[in-house]
Image (cartoon, rainbow, N blue to C red; front, side):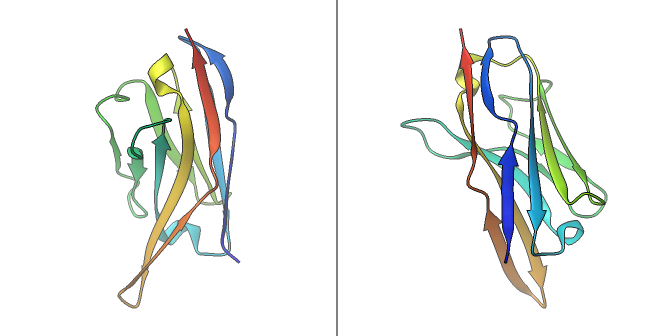
Length: 120
């Protein structure tokens, strides 16, 4: 059974930091490209950051570049998102996403999400 379980969200003041974690199970984590998405109330879901399965190349939304860092620990089957200099506009539900290809077929999985609230 595939599971992606996020943790680390909470309430923080503007300028503060949080570290999100996403613990994966039920699939070969090291083979999956991983991402963090977020969705704020009344807004569409957006990609925050991604990291490849091989080489660990990363990409970020312009709105979080220089403030957020995505990383992964394949030995622990865990994805991280270090969020610094948080702003009220970062308030959203943050979900992790996994994507892998097996024999040419795409398999993808979503976590339930963790709430991040940044007060001004």
